[in-house]
Amino acid sequence: MENVNLLLKEFIEYLQLEKNYSQLTIDSYEHELKTFFMFMDEQAIPSINEVTHQDARLYLTKLFEQRFAKKTISRKISSIRSFFKFLMRESKVDTNPFAQVSLPKLEKKLPDFFYEEELEVLFQSVDCSTPAGQRDKALLEIIYATGIRVSECAGIKLSDLDQHLSILLVKGKGNKERYVPYGKFANQAIHEYIEYGRKKLMGKQNHPYLFVNQKGTPLTARGIRYIFDEMIKQSGMNKHIHPHMIRHSFATHLLNRGADLRTVQELLGHSSISSTQTYTHLTKEHLKKTYLAHHPRA
Image (tube, rainbow, N blue to C red; front, side, top):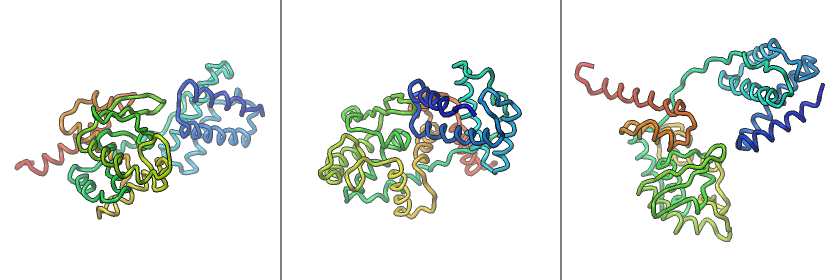
């Protein structure tokens, strides 16, 4: 079989340089394509150019037989389809055998979110008497105030904050930047953390990142998730939490209180408004529940 790894290398460079994808996304593409190359070996397909539509359908069938979730299968097929699309652009192949492969229809699952009363319990449960507690409160406040992703939160530097104007410079997916305002509660929590908690946690460390762990080194996305798990335990709430729920809550609460969809799209950093429209389903559900609970003839 031809050296598909050379084609993969070119594709990865394209994802890095032209698409500005994150390393996590690029690693995912690389894994899916290497798995597909193993399938080519098993089927004795000697060349990328000789992959047919029937081969693509057979690969899809194999994924179903392995009982992958529909969302996972869609991601795998989309990765390979993008690879062939790139190869066509570079005149390496004549056709894209995955172009007409039907992806499994995904169930529309509404995002989990907190009601405002639940979030208040979470805020009240944080012990701000310790440096770590001051950090945790600042984490919770800034994610809820801005709706940023966990990876974006982990990447915040001190220079990204304008505490006077209460505005945060967020570096999002594909290195796209956006400015997001935040309110007085987040501003106060961040100020207290920077002045007291962060200095104690930093020790002899010296780096520009806002959020740090107990050793003073930059807090990772995994570290943030662990902190949120601990918050739920301390709050006594019988609920599974992930930081993205705070982002979902940010969007849902804004829309519930009358914010327009375009503004929420810009704040979230969504490239397509269809991603933001998911939250309108949540607000409709909220309206329906409120109506049924309070209307005398519901």
